[in-house]
Amino acid sequence: MAKSGDWLVPQVNGLPRYDKPPLIYWLMGGLYALPGSDQWDPLGSWAARLPSALASMATMVALADTLLRWPPSGLAGDGPPAAGLGRVATAINAALAFALGPLMLVWGRTEVSDALFTATLGLSLLLAWRTFAAEQGPWWPCWSVLALAVLSKGPVAIVLFVLSLTLFWLFGAEAARLLRRLRPCPGFALTLVLAAPWFAVALLREGKPYWDSFFGYHNLQRFSRVVNNHHQGPWYFFVVLVLASLPFTPLLLLSLRRVLLEVRTPLAAPLSLGRFATAWLLAVLLFFSLSATKLPSYWLVATPAAGLLVALAPFNAWQAGYGVAQGHQGQRGLRLAMAASSALLVLVSAALALAPQWLPLINDPTLPGLAAAVGRRPWLNLGAAVTLAAALLLSGLASNRPTARLLQSQAALLLLVPLVLLPVWQIGDQLRGAPIRQLAAVARAERSVAEPLAMVGLIKPSLHFYSQSTVLFEGRSPHALVNLTDRLRAESRPGLQPSSADRQPTLLLVIDVETANKPHWQTMEGEQLAQAGPYRLWRLDRLWLEQRARLLQQGGIVPTWRNPRPEMI
Image (cartoon, rainbow, N blue to C red; front, top):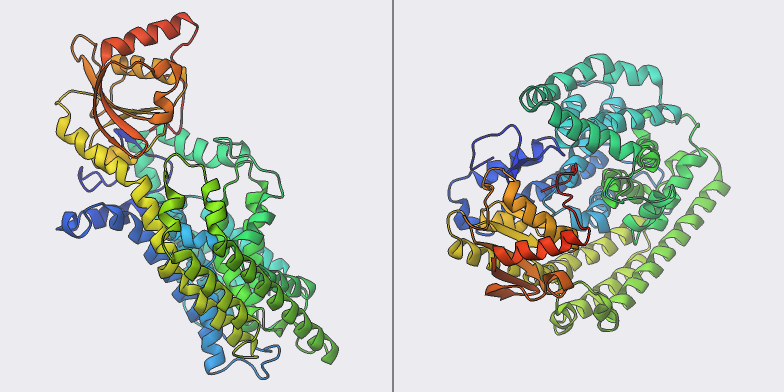
């Protein structure tokens, strides 16, 4: 977008990319288009990842601000309703419980739309509840932000928004108040007015391919049929729910249990945040459990709700007025949940301390030498010490107040980001990403004007980004070799023109060691130009490639690249 000036639909490797709406691409493209971006962002990673990081931080601020404005009451073991430092601690707990979840630690800095969708849908839902809880104020902010969520991921934003509010109503929210405060008819109209124009213009320009790809494949088919072998049982997101909030999953489950036990009890609107967060989380669980295609990233939109429920675990507002016995029972449940979370932290600490034993078991050809690179640094030992300290703080080493213990533990865990996550991430990037950047630089220097560039075996789209060339990607199988040969002769896209071996006798080929050892790729004829990590860059003889393809075709291997492939790059 930044290079072409076409801001309607992004182009990737010479093909239009229809799988997501444009908001994440507009944000990335805007950063790439800033003057001097080559100097402050030479690898292009800041512009790609900054929208996700900023969106995640915006969600943290929104969670904290919501709890500061509408503090819970009935703090189990802390005496009076949250006020002063307890109020601030609860707000920070919600933000950190969201941000330090295993899924957000990864996707919060990843160059895809999931973190942005989590932020925009989460903000729209928080604004909807805040509108419901307040006695006065505008109705339109939540619907405006919902339009941004639609432009981040598509119609699924509206489905999850409506399903969350519906469950909230079924959990006892006053229907008349919801309708009066949120005004759904003009609200949905506003969302459509803001979001629909891009879809209409894209459909008018791109036509049936856009309709079939975005609405047909990436929305309807992903829900109704298994796509890309992402098949899991109906229990899948129950497991993800447990894993995504570690190590504070026991506190999350405690909050869910309390809300569901008292779900039909009348509750004042300003005290219904826990009930609303439960409806939000269960809406995501229900919808994506019904989906045929299941991915862990789908759960991200539930993580702000999970963060709220973790922070609200020390409170028993939903039990107010039910007597002393219920209060003691709530405190006993809270003590058990915090003890279980402390035990989980001890297990994580032990796993980090024992990393030299299990790191060599990671068998990823794109991360050669990971165990040695990480093992000779002190990061994992520091991480083990920090996690153990977090366990002790949560168990009451420095305070007997539940909110303070949770905050102290999460503050300790926050140190894991600079001490462990970022250094290990940097090592992973050096092992996984640097070889591709090195070979892309050689390919740019060596490539003649019309010489094709291809990659077989391990498929790394970053080769296209760093080489600034259209790349033919194929896999490891004999079909891949036959496909590559046929595509060189017949395929046309921006940056790639069909050619024969006579007109263009060579191609540049990036191939990994494992693929090169396959029988159909052995004895390649040409010149090896460079090697980096598990990859080799060859200037390959097209005549050899065509001869090898003819032998495979004589054995019954036929080209398959013309078959419809919605995910083709």
